[in-house]
Picture 1 (cartoon, rainbow, N blue to C red):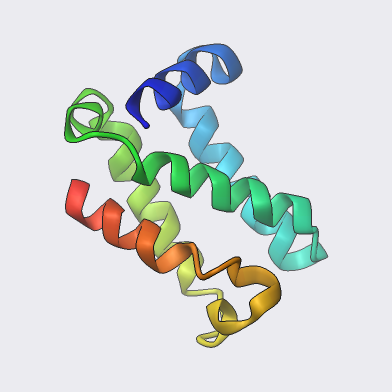
Picture 2: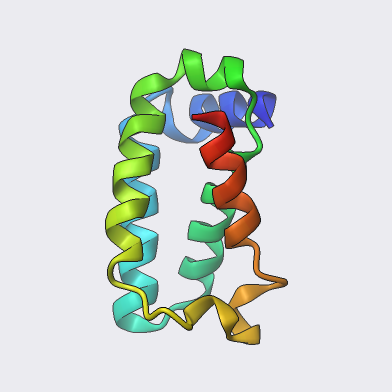
Length: 106
């Protein structure tokens, strides 16, 4: 998890964690307002990637994790309560385990 995060930040975002958070924000908005399933999958994958990192990675990227937590918290306020119960989006309900891992890390 941590190695993947470092590679993704370096290769896709030139080491700028703010762009990863912006990507999380944009993909959520595209899914929420346009129903773009690939944007939802990208949002899901970014959250999962962050949740699989080690505690050491969180310490190395504290600003990223603090901003990601604020962003995801705000995003959750826009989602209907039963959203993750829908089979089409839940994919085995990825979000609850990812959120639990996130909480344990931080």
